[in-house]
Image (cartoon, rainbow, N blue to C red; front, side, top):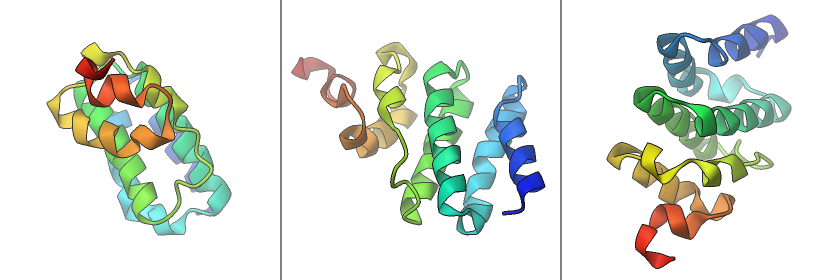
Amino acid sequence: MESKDFVDFLRDLLSLDEAVRTEASNRVQDFVNLLSGAQARVVGDLIAMLALHEESRVALEAHLHALTDLDGCGKLDGVDLSPLGDIPESAIHVEHREYMEEFAPGYRGAISVADPGAQ
């Protein structure tokens, strides 16, 4: 992906506007194959960090889906998913559970998120 387009995309991910953040995460599936390995790691690391602090239920789902898109193309290698383990249980809704379980091996605290009764 061209440098300018990549930077514009990162700016959208960091937008204060929930709709812009959601749309940016949704766009990952459109250009995941254009990302270099380094770009994919930056996007994955950023999205994992953003997910931890995301207040919007819809945007959180889009972030988690974007990580799935990266994973589906083999571009999640080297991404630090540990911030996902710090997402408060109260922020994880039914539409997020499948994603969280999928990524559980990649972050600390997987048992408490995947099965709250297993602690």
